Image (cartoon, rainbow, N blue to C red):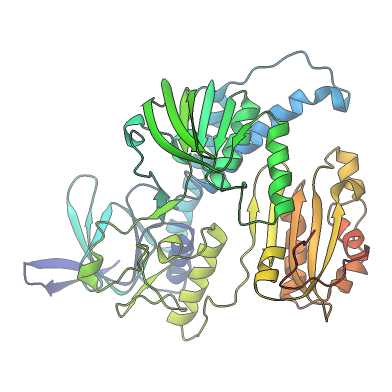
Length: 485
């Protein structure tokens, strides 16, 4: 149990409870940090205002993939004839879809709490804020307060969906990913603002459940930071499924109420256009959760974009205070939050680990998936790195043919003057799993010929890497290339 002590401030003298580590925010990185440090004999407390385990198991990664998988099952029903299965009709029960997701979340919460019990870490449901350096005031659900002092403090409060200051938008009470995953009926017509991860994934899922979907994005391409061939393939996928895509479009104003009737006016190529739907989903980015944390009382500074300012070791501007995950401006992936924990753990236990130079894999969980590790062509060209391009269609993969999942392609960048793999992109069935094999090869410094000459199980999707790296590569491409396809 934590020991009791006293601390004084200019305002009052308060009872404090002393811990080796206090964690403000219960995301994945901080949850694993709590379990790990507690298992090592440290006194650890985690404070979160709502979620056991943070966003990922409750309202983000895992619930969204749960819903997306239900949508994939619906797509298989529609494709039944293709597999020799007679289709006699079916209907979507969104309350049942939601219940499956809720059951998973409940199970995860129970598992997480059991880990807290096993390790001895303490989970505190409440709202925390700094009142002095390394001292946090926690307001509990019953309005009582506790005061926790940590020898070290980690801030991991994450981000939330951004609601832009567009006339009428806030008043329309739009869905974010949180509310979209709690729908108990299929939207008749879903308007989606934002063509990034959340917007694209949920557009496809809701379309497969039966919604009419209109997807609006301000950029010239969906997932605009990807290579042109990737963006085009993704756009064609969504259009083939019946999603109306409006690019280079900016929302000017909104009226009505999401869930009933909502209208938006967009400006596209200099012309205004009105769209009307039943539901509105906003997915235009994330805002860091740094408000009302009392960071100024702790000496923790923010960046110009509102994220906590950290160095490469994830130290804040306040001694003994660290920040991890999205609130620290790290790439917005759960696996990066977990690696942020590793960085902090190493530095609190005598190591010198840093965030610089690490790999950042990602996967967009559309069907098929889009996965990438390392450089894409645009990045290689921008950095002036000559490369050879290997690229093959998924239809050349025999397992993909057996599964009738031949949409997409694999491509890899290999350094022009060596056999080093610079990057890999897969747009295809289970692309994330295939990417992992290439990532491990890159971590090990394995040349591309190592994958080309490997004996991989037949028939598997990963076996397609042999065909990819056995294909004829392009002539080296350079920074000033006008074409990288």
